[in-house]
Length: 250
Ligand SMILES: Nc1ncnc2c1ncn2[C@@H]1O[C@H](COP(=O)(O)OP(=O)(O)OP(=O)(O)O)[C@@H](O)[C@H]1O
Image (cartoon, rainbow, N blue to C red):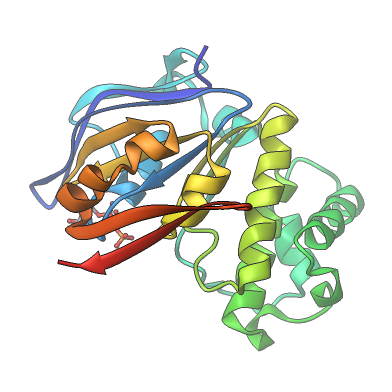
């Protein structure tokens, strides 16, 4: 059964349809990459899946039941959401920020879990540093650690690799894969299509609020889709580490 899904989801923002009849599901144990051009609706899909974006038609379902039937605490225990926005309002030490991901634990246990999550994303050395005094990429790692500290069975990450160095981008994908292997359902929005093709089991391509493709990476990101949806010429090159996208402007 799907961990989380959208069924005919349609949503309006400022009177404009930003999602149109979207069907999408994430199964426990799989990593699904969500991609598409700027403004295509990736963040809107993620917000609809959390319940933050109300639907005008269709339904979001959590473990097969209407998402709206779950209270905020039950949703929070099942779903973790890493938003695209990386602002942090207070200058707290990184470990305290990451511990906010585990609000149901006691302070001590939450900090232990936060430290583990910081170490998992190779940011243990930042634990005592104030988040306002960090680089953008360092702060992104702290927020990713907060997201991991939830240990939620459903993980929704909105562009977790943006602004990270190449090693950290690969590490983020490895960590998400480990969580999926442990049974989590993972949805991750990505602009780096080589990263998506190599690390996702399935890719969902959004285009102007609709699902343009949904399938194994090489099918969903076939050259015809790249041309129609992204407006670029594309060819996949095979390497020992997996496919790499070669793209050009048309
Ligand atoms: N608060 C808002 N009010 C009105 N329209 C919005 C709002 N937020 C987003 N939109 C519009 O909704 C559409 C989908 O935006 P969304 O953020 O879901 O796209 P995205 O695929 O995540 O884009 P990006 O790759 O640029 O992050 C866009 O046309 C955008 O202009």
